View (tube, helix red, strand yellow):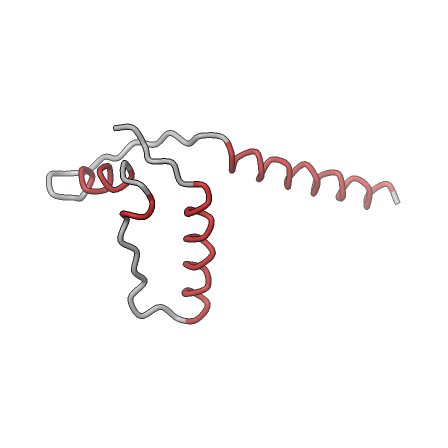
Length: 83
C-alpha cells in the first residue's frame, strides 16, 4: 500500500513540475555557421505570434494533431523574445 501512495506522490510532483516549467521563462542560445539560419530564427522569435508563418507540409494525421496542439499552446502562451 505504501508503494502505491509513493507513486501517486511522485506523479503529483511530476505534474506540478511540468506546469511550473510552462510558466517559467526559457533562455536559450542560437549558434551556427554563417547561413545556418540563426539570425532568421532569432528574428522570428522576436515577432508577435500572429506574424509567424506556420506550415506542416505533408504531415501524417498524428503529426498534424501534434502540430495543432503545439500551435494552440504557443498561441496562448506566446511572448516575443527580446533580442
